[in-house]
Image 1: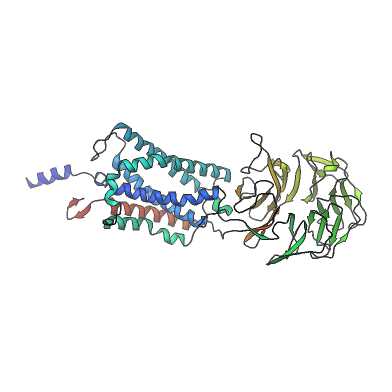
Image 2 (image 1 turned 180 degrees about the vertical axis):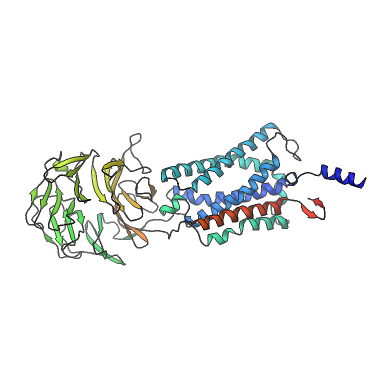
Length: 525
């Protein structure tokens, strides 16, 4: 008889899932989701080109950990309420209440799915699309979540602290178990999001020569000096210090080159071409026969061979600037000759109609990209062509291709992208200086870009150089600097530790907060 009663009691005893506290599960999920939304505000600020109050790598770590830990509460709550119209121990439910719950199931599944996919090393454009989807689904989930929490608040009220009623000890312990481990990971943050990896979240600051137009900036070949030109010629040590003005004729500087060889700096102006063996001068005027020198290129093999662009087309000197020959055959509009650069043993140049390649006796069209104002080679075998209107194209493996995904387009329905120049550094990082929209950074060799404009004054950015642990930019309003955060990518061990810790501690928090307490063989709420 006793055995029969015990068996009947065991048969009527609800399973573990049915004994989970809906109030504790809901309160715990709201706590973790609120933390995720709070950290998400830092990404929103960065997307709005505003500085983040917290380094984005640290935000990445907290955001991902909280997301992983919240999955345990989400799965437990879905298992507890099920997918049926009726929910055990929840009276007075009507169908549209469940519609809201089912919509939340879909939305949160989308949030978790896009979040997981963002952790995979997809190409930057795909990651940007996933980030947009993650943000949109999170925003869409906000309204039904708010209604759901308010409508079922009576279940969570016991877990909400008040002045005269502290939190239940078990729930407080569970919240601590769920959240506390994130502190350890925050001490060793990793750049997980695309925004963190491009260095977003900080702000540009005006650093020197305020209010002075500067449209050129280069580093000398020995790597010791920065030279900037525009309304005057200026220099500064790469190691730091102040910018000082160099004695130079009062001409507007239009071109700047710092080649290898006995001449350290060439300067092009509206009236001619100058050269100096040192950044600080003295500068001598070469016998250049034309005006408005924008582009200067020195042969990397023979420093006596100099090319320069002008209002009268392209000119070449083979004796270090003593004599010059006009070499504009093949150029469609010689008066619009502009950029010129050596790349992989070949000379490239541009006018308003396109980009050309020098064959040894004439110019041949290489690209029909119009209004190219800068031709910038990289050390990994790419040549970037920046255009006033047609964005960026890159020449690699013998062909040109568009390379400006993510850059801001102007003029409404017509895609017009104004780029002043590209600076390439080893490792795939590229920095774009833009006429109307500040700066942008690429971490995939220029295939896609992320804008970084916080702190910049309105106007053009003409050139960006990485210097030390930051960036230096020449702009319409002087020199600006940007501090780059020290970035560390996550390794396999770090990832495994984060996922395992978030999952295990999240599950432990669910058990501690929502399961009944064991007392002998009986279960009590």
